[in-house]
Length: 443
Image (cartoon, rainbow, N blue to C red; front, side, top):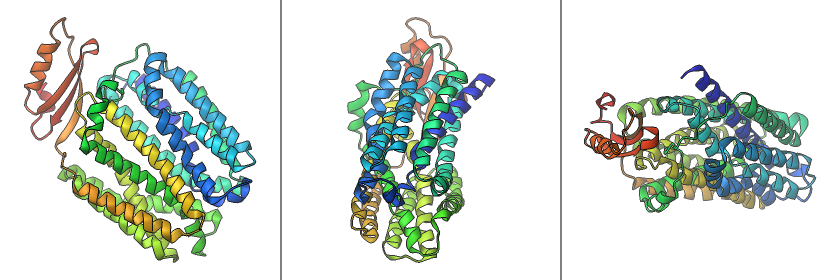
């Protein structure tokens, strides 16, 4: 990537980090902050945790469509202003209903897909994979920092300080947007990101894709419902002070990365993802089953750490699997639905976790989660292997008038190319290839 592309990638990645931190920081804190908001109940706190997922799920696709029409920066500005407003409303709310309203407004700034589209506008076709990697790293870092900073900041200054931090970070995001990130001269039609209404029926009738949608919904349901009670589990061990929660989250997160490293290594060489999916989901079953009864220090850490390992690996593998099964030129539509399912999982996790906490029955929640994870395991048993399938986006030489059909015909006749879509105006082709037969230098 050239200097401008690096600057754009790092700045957009920083915007992602700021926004995701603001949403994640409160998740491990709110379950034990019930006494800081009037009229609170465990159920309402659970809704406050998950409601941002509901509003993001509703607005993710509309924001992306509107950005195509009105411009990326305008929609990102609107999204950041909603996020900032929601943060300050939550920070100054005296009761739980104001907290819920603030969290819902935070989620209304559903700019994730718009930020990706902006990144696509600012990078060349052959550099987009690198730029998306930068954003992926930023998202991973934001989760780790949120687990570390959230509990520590809340313990010192109170939970409202997290929302003040988020609001100020959003203002910093606006500054970055207009001082560092250049305005694209042309909005590209990157079909790896663009949501196409014409392909909605195709996506919703694809059972392999619906299986992945269900997988990301369950994964994020387990994450948020788990975080509704993880702080309480730390408390019941009798050995972890609330001031130390962030330390233990960090240790478990780092340990989980070491656990999944061999799986990442071998998945790249075996090209077999289904066994790894089944091992990870089976481990989710074991984690929930373990946490159903145990309250001892080491077993609680083992159960939570095992879940962190499963989550971190599946969080990266599931989007990759969507890219494999989506037809050429339809990845943006498929990912739009996939991210919507992800955010609905956030919301369901908060609602279910809060409802279970009304009776303070942690064991019952994990018993339910064990059943949910086992059903997920059975669903994945039916998945087909798509390990040799990959997507490619290539820049073509200038296409002369009337020759797009000939280019498409030539691409489809290339060994290993399964499907192809050509965007004549941008001289770009989107391919679905069998990597065991396709050679990158063949086109």
